[in-house]
Amino acid sequence: MKKLEDLILTYKDFPKKGIDFKDVLEIPQNPDIFQDLILRMSSIQFLKNAEAIISIDARGFIFGSAVALESSKPMIVARKPGKLPGQILTREYDLEYGKNSLSIQSNALKKFNSFVIVDDLLATGGTVNCVARLLQDQRKEILGLITVVELKKLKGRSKFDFPVNSIISL
Ligand code: AMP
Image 1: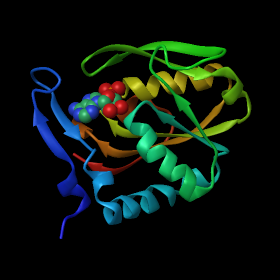
Image 2 (image 1 turned 90 degrees about the vertical axis):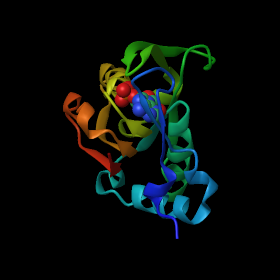
Image 3 (image 1 turned 90 degrees about the horizontal axis):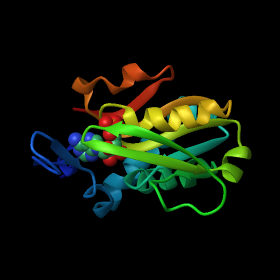
Image 4 (image 1 turned 120 degrees about the vertical axis):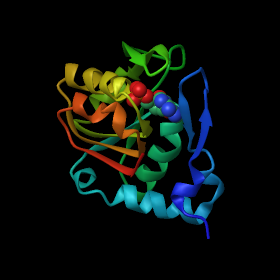
């Protein structure tokens, strides 16, 4: 029988040379394993005290929305450039490969005071750090980060002053 670990495939040199890309997209193709993962992510203690979840574009949405449903928490999103209508807050960040920016809708952010961040994978921590700064600039509390995969050797978690719970460490 397949396990969660078996569903995380490695693609060498994608999207550029030197990157071992970890593909999590086989997980939702296996409903039993996906469901078990979502139950584990949803039972993490610091999530219980959060008013809302914020999930990160785009694979973070797959896991974040399922955790939001399972834990009965509202979810808002951080999105890549040009995707969000209305008034937005934006910040640039560095990726393991390249540069990007993330935006949050101001009206969505206003409604909640404490958040748990959900994403698919923690690498250098630049992406999550960008979301964390956007939240902290608005005086929002961050109770923790939940990710499916953490690439431990990149030490992303050392950038944060909140707890990190990753289901698989590689
Ligand atoms: P980072 O900002 O370096 O922590 O990168 C995290 C984000 O980039 C996550 O949302 C991942 O989807 C993506 N990412 C970065 N590195 C990888 C990798 N080696 N394999 C798969 N996704 C990655």
